[in-house]
Length: 440
View (cartoon, rainbow, N blue to C red):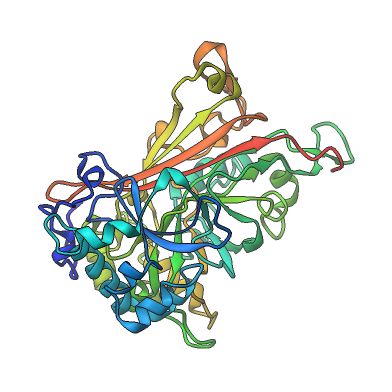
């Protein structure tokens, strides 16, 4: 993909190097061209604070040495326990913060000696949610995922007639969004057993992961005032990895007529680092609708979105079973895809979400839906990879998986790379499945 976008500036220069040497490694997730943001606690600390990643370190943005680099509004926002106040300031402020950090962290910068006192090793902290998430909506932007799952549920009509007209989504559960590293308890619920008339209540037997991208809203909009698609990216603060855990057996029984409910609301895992919209600029490229498909309605169409609406982030899902952990085996790759395959863009998601006058707020989270690609190996969930569980995956040492078992850990990773730009990463979103509450 080409980066045919405006807004590239000195912070994107691939020649930049940092005085934090770990940021200069060729495969580093967090080079100086990235500078993602997170909320963390120091060892022994009780309160969250905001930091920016550089290599394997964090710049504490509340530290006096960092605060001295910032103007008053930025300094105040960066003393908070989460990113909401910074998000509310808007894209000009986000860009000023990024520029100040980039200049201070470059090799040869005069701030090198004083700013060392503000560095913390990432391995020595605990992460919290990067922002207070007031609302969570999950979309369904991969036509490949929608079609594959549709074939399993509705063989006679895999893709519903509204899919190519409407960026379909549902209102999720913000209170159960949790940060990478927190365990996920196997959910209980109603399940319809084949051949039985009455459903039973039991732990899910078909627990699945979903390989998604999360979009965090920055500055919001007032009720009754939709965000035009041409201005959508001005309201996007950044992206995270997102695993919208799914209980497929609960989902199959409950999803008609109103869609997902208890099959999704028990847990959503996100990565701690928010890669900002500005850092992603080199990895945006042209978006188009396949020949013969309906073209987007006017409120979902924009020349700039066609020129640079596609976002090319490689997304990977790995599994670590209890046996693999005991053997200290490397995580096994389940699938690799890219967000460039999405049928709907980030800007279209934002524009559609607000077309009815819905107000978005700083920290609201939009899920992309499972990001499956056109090839079988690019399926972003087990329900696709195993044909609904009928064809279990063969893992090492004779292990097989149709769906997830207790003790399994799913690790999502993501990165962007292209010729002429510095590779940047999204870090990881990881969580281990633990047994259902016996009281459930």
